[in-house]
Amino acid sequence: MADSILEIKGLSVEFSSRGKKRVRALDGVDLTLLRGETLAVVGESGSGKSTLLRAATALIPPSSGKVILFGSDLSKTGTPELKSLRRRCGYVPQDPYGAIPPALTAVDAVTEPYVIAGVKCSKDERRERAEKILSDLGLSGERILNSRAVSLSGGQRQRVEIARALMLAPELLLCDEPTSMQDASTRGEIIEVLAERVKRGMSMLFVTHDLLLAAQASQKIIVLKDGKVCERGSAEEILSSPKHPYTRALIDALPRLAL
Image (cartoon, rainbow, N blue to C red):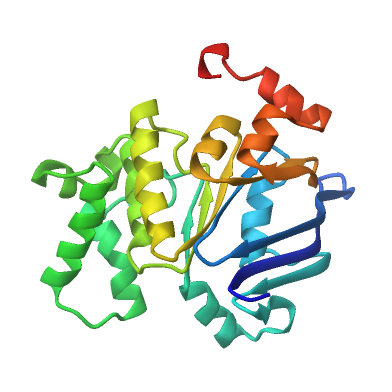
């Protein structure tokens, strides 16, 4: 498909539980993400959302189905090419506590991807770019920028993780509950920052349990239940006329004031 960044076709992923029983985390999932587009994936814990993100870059292998990333079938991709494809992606993990090296300061944690990727620029240029992204995300001032990760709050660490993921200007951003530790106003600011990158051509797969946040982040939503897509459509359609009982239950659980 023209301008397709990510195509997932009939994707199923199975794991072995402690009792050796096979558990199907994803079951026949299909989706397409175009360049400059956001797709929100909504579901409760255990619905398969995080598994979907990991499978999208072959961090876990599928039991069946295909993942086509930047036009390459990941099942037929060797290690060097896979590494190259992954470098074009950014990933925001669900848990920011274990993701940032604790000895690094906030600004050093954000510049680290430049160092690892071997981007040729001065230390001052790296720091300037990192400080700009952190400032966009509401983190500024020498005290915060030079604080070690262990001394930052959960919400601050989460924003550092988002900045790390944006540092190399990814073509595809994979977000796993990226605003779960933020207050309402900060969530809105972060969504605006990400939306601006999407306007510039970045694509985003945005995973959340929050249906209203999904609608704020994206015009297109798919709803996952027990590893299956139970509903898909525009944010407006899903919020105003949900077809699946599970989607209706998610909407019924929303705070009345939010609607």
